[in-house]
Length: 157
Image (cartoon, rainbow, N blue to C red; front, top):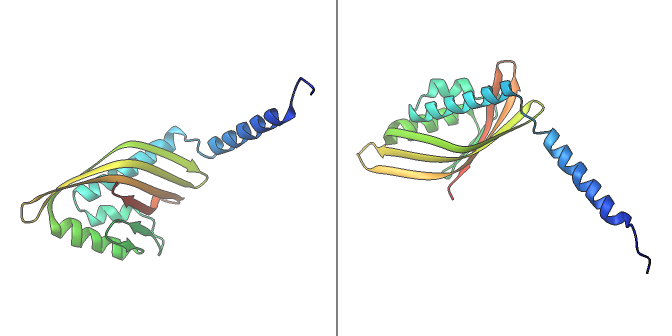
């Protein structure tokens, strides 16, 4: 058996380094984009906490097809989304408090996404307290009006 240098481990290391470099290149986030996405997250949180459908519609894409997936239903239009805000957030809860932590934001061209942990505490219209928590992913598209939400998916642990 010959001792010495083997090309296989070196080739595997080069492939791994190239793969890591390619993945990181697609997720570079400049400071302006970071601020814009964080601002959208703030406005999203405010629209939930205030059950504000007008604010909600300013942060979503105006595309005819959007998606909002939650443990209760899948919504695929802005009108459906507005109905969820009215029927669930406005009518079922008298107080709402959505908070987020562990936010991670990434971009790839004109698309971006944020992943975070959320906690929602609220009071039902009848006075009973409510609490839930989980994970959320929001997907954004860069439009002529700036970044806009096109998809939200959240789940409870």
